[in-house]
Image 1 (cartoon, rainbow, N blue to C red):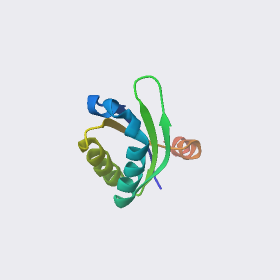
Image 2: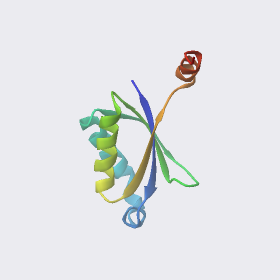
Image 3: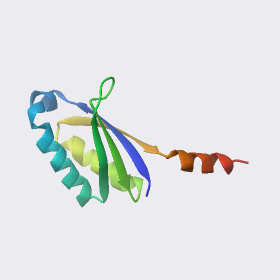
Length: 97
C-alpha cells in the first residue's frame, strides 16, 4: 500500500485549543479510516511543521480527500508527499534506463 507523509501546521484556532489535540488526533484517525486512509504514526515535531503523520492508503485520491477534510476543520494546514520506503526506492533506481 502506498505510504504518504503529511506535515501539519497549527492554525491560530488550532494552537489556541492545543490542549484538545489528543482528542483531535483520535477524531483524525476516525476520519482517516472512513476515507480509506490509515494513520500509522503521529509525531509532534519542531521546525517548519508542528505534527507529522505517516499514512497508508490505497491511492493518493483518498489521502487528498482526507487532507482536505482535515484542513476544513480549521485547526491545521496540511502538506502531503508520497513516500517510498528504502527497498522500493532501490527497486525504482534499479529499473532506470
